Figure 1 (cartoon, rainbow, N blue to C red):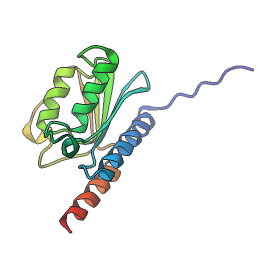
Figure 2 (figure 1 turned 30 degrees about the vertical axis):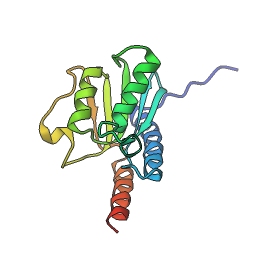
Figure 3 (figure 1 turned 180 degrees about the vertical axis):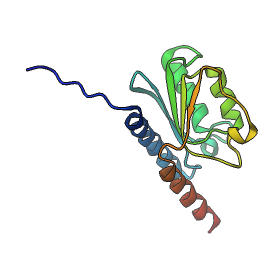
Amino acid sequence: MPLEFVFLNMELDDQYFMKQALVEAEKAAFADEVPVGAVVVVGQRIIARAHNLTERLHDVTAHAEMQAITAAANYLNGKYLVGCTLYVTLEPCVMCAGALAWSQLDRVVFGAGDSKRGFQQATLNLHPKTSLSGGVMAAEAKLLLDAFFAKKRK
């Protein structure tokens, strides 16, 4: 019996991995952290999972992206993430964009845009070899964020 191979298109892959980042965002919300989650993928394999830990660690730099970069670098035993894709539920801030640029990721995929604190509003660029995709499962990511902040305002 011949083997069958199933090839997923980029959109389906992006949705699958963004769903994994959304699981991380839900963990953050459960811990009363701003619900942002991230995963780092290389060769269709998740090598790092993270969510915001700023409250737990009392560290303003403990964003999901920063945690994911560190975990992936530790996994790869190197500081550069060439060949990797970061999926994050919210457009990275300026701080995270700087770290993403230094890490030399192949690709960054984000869910919801952030018109107030996102790096694009500051007209910053990632590493020249890093491609950027936004809006993947943006409605789901925005729903988590909106619910979290509505609860905080009560």
